Amino acid sequence: MTKEVRDALEAERRFRILNYVLSAKNVSAELRDFGIPNSTFYRWKATYEKEGKPGLFRKKPVAKSYPGQIPKEYVAKILELRSQYHLGPQRIAWYLERYHSFKTSSSSVTRTLKRNGIGPLPRNVGRRALHTHRYAKQVPGHQVQIDVKFLTLVTTDGKKPRRYQYTAIDDATRICALKIYQKHNQKSAIDFVDYVVEKFPFRIHTVRMDRGHGVASPVPLACRR
Image (cartoon, rainbow, N blue to C red; front, side, top):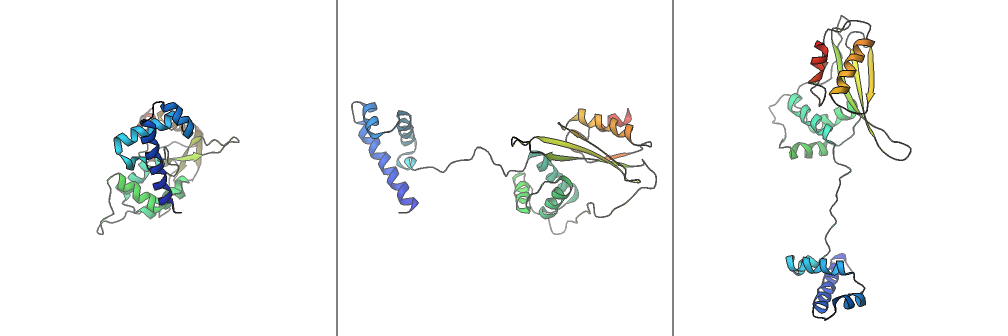
């Protein structure tokens, strides 16, 4: 017996029970004989009155959460890579895996772009190079790169807390400073700038970063201070 036949028979059974119980004098007693809770019966009744007999068919369960859904912070990064660098879905997926340790497929990136109203790249749009050439400044501290990496840890009890690794790299000496925070906000960004200024053994002239959430606005103020 196929699933479609079983569902049709179950819908017919519910329909007959509804008609029989509604015509009875004692609804609760009849439902006890059938072994059906009152709440289930009245749910069938409400669905039947609203949708008719098709409403008595079993419905597919709807997921309340989507474990495979791309987190919001990575959605923002995908949109940024497309708008600023004109990268295709595959290159965006490679970038996220390499620089943010977040693995996703090009098809997921495509669906994310489509949900945000962004279609395929035109054929005549040039792609900007992104992290394809390793360069170095001549003077230490002339330019310091700051970026944030999203970390997903696993505790002994199976929980997955999110942490944020702030990293600063000098383009001349490749001296690196990093610090991990529980939150990705203005307070963490300002604290990290102070930390970098204290730890680097030379004066910092320029800080370069992307316009990520919680970082872009407070860092220039901290640098001026």
